[in-house]
Image 1 (cartoon, rainbow, N blue to C red):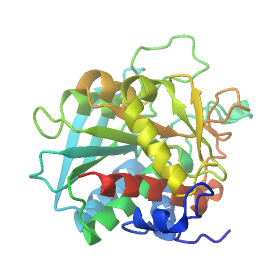
Image 2: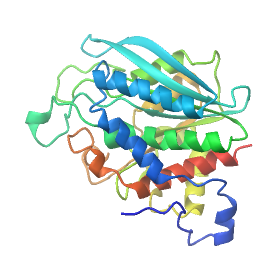
Image 3: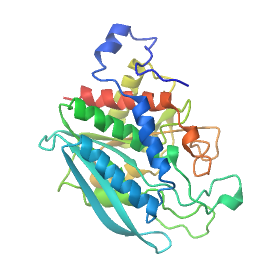
Image 4: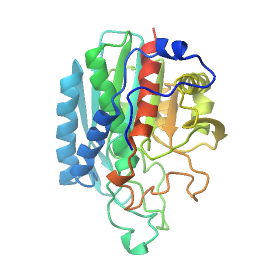
Length: 314
């Protein structure tokens, strides 16, 4: 389906009011190209050649847009004892600004399709087009927009590695805190000593057709005012069908550690689907999570909402 760069007008807001809150137009075609570029590398499993190639591309891409880029290279032990050589990649806008916003997503992909309906696929790696690449694609387009029109406050865009290297769901022995390794490391070792931000937004699985994003439990516990602000902006922009007002159960994701360890109130924009057993995107952790499942209209809804949220901060 084609995608316009102009969002639909909300039924509850006059068009002229919606126009006033849009300082820049998110480009969904550009975001989609960034998603596809990641999946073209193949599964970006930590320690893999595709992961290393994608890391170089992400760093190079951010350097085109951000005045400062930092890469955190570190080792972490996986659930099975494997030493993972990980990289968090960080773009910094308005480095000297004290008032800051954190935007983040994970860029690695799952080594196991352990939710695939075919058990023969359970140890195969996934492309992670929606689960990982979609959030990164949206944030790369936002970074490009910042290079054209700088936000009035500081913004840090962080791409976390090692988010999806947790133990397979069909293994008996589960290891505590074996997911979200990159965000755990960054939360304990931020790229700036004593780093703080007004609030943070995590993007996870933000590219599926007709996706719905609910007010998730951890987000509502730590950052309810910011959740409501983002959802209100989405409504003003006409994206009520994506950003719904339902409150849903807490989940462990990168924002859990950012909230708990770094104490930056951070919300998670994550696909919720009540019809699936996982309550996630229907192709979550399956071989079906590929570029064919990415919808430009959803990228637009999320990207324009986050971009507008940042530009409204003073």
